[in-house]
Image (cartoon, rainbow, N blue to C red; front, side, top):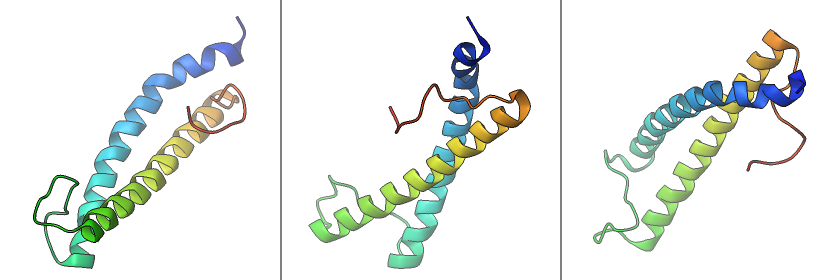
Length: 98
């Protein structure tokens, strides 16, 4: 088994750590953005009976965009760190998320 085949397995704990941290960071960022937009501490969720469709979908869209951007930044940072330290990119092949 060559170096390129073993590296994705080695990257998994690093990726998990970056993913966990990015989720926490994205949650904090979303709360700040929502407070700036709507001047409310709590964003609506799908089961919030007193909120309309527009508010629920706006909150979901903003939250999704923030989480995707932060996760991508964290994944890219981790991959670049692995490449710098080992000389090998951690992904098996080109392509999107699994």
